[in-house]
Image 1: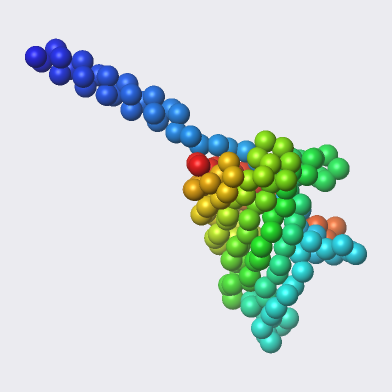
Image 2: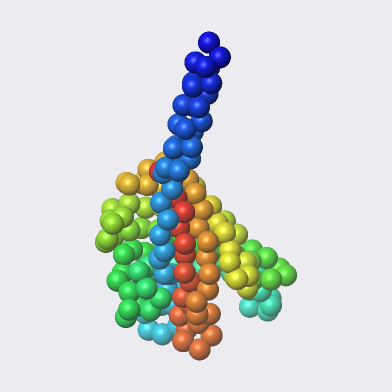
Length: 171
């Protein structure tokens, strides 16, 4: 009887280890191009508080985005696979802390026709920022997970901020 119980315990442990190894997590990278300057901006301020222009952090400003998502850090080197659509709000009076509310809408590639909904704080001066994946559609229906954002180019000279997003998602 003890041998049978030990065998059952061993089989359960092996099953759990196998399930942990195949946890259903999908990880990939996309590059977000936030164009605030030029003749065809993809990020436009749509609202602001009376004090936003005098605030050192633009506190109270709201920006609508329809930013390209590509497979590479430059638009020339990467293929466009979708758009980041939504808003970000300057929500911190002390530093550049944004409230990000956006969908990654995939229009090409492996995730074509699917979306991810992302919500969270983006403290842009930090090296790596983490935000929640709170849902999705298509391949990502009922998604949960997180993204990590890392700025590649601040856009200080070009007017285009490039951010690498590492997506970690379960659907």
